[in-house]
Image 1 (cartoon, rainbow, N blue to C red):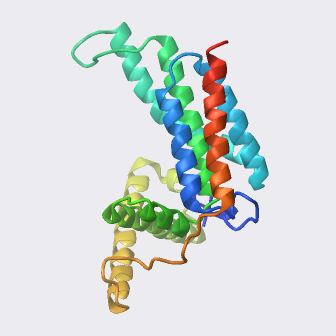
Image 2: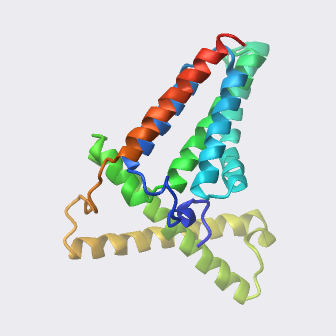
Length: 249
């Protein structure tokens, strides 16, 4: 299947892959919180954090260009929010409120991109089951984790049904979905969701028949090691050094 996910790189063997997911989650949270709370000298701070993340991506043996490109997926969403805010500044009216300066808008886009890059590194070096287990041990609500896990799993169901329909259409000489116009594309999407929903119902009944009680298996036990403490200490020290250096730049 060809989803835009980073599961392909979870099976690599690197120092980052072998770390406890809790340490990686906390380090990623520290980076994101640092970016959110940063105000002055943001250009220098974002450049320094990107350099740190790029070094960690290289260390993890995940392709750097792949992560840099996939992090751009967040830009349309942040760009739309920033555009709405800029419209509120330049075109005040009933449909817009507030407004950001161009510098603040650029800072918001930069923060979103660097934060997405940090999350990409976390997902690329941590299996989904380990990531959810780490979040569970960090006392994240179980209902939220169950929703996330089912959402990720059923994305594969939706993707597989779409590929089956596309293969069947091409084998009958139908070409791509877009070749039949908007009407054919809308009908294909409707059929896709009906088929995916029906298959999801069958999967759920199969899970109930196998004893599913509303909680997924816990999986392997996690162990906090010296490497995890080192990662946290180095991340916090680097962020503190960047903040201190920004005061003199």
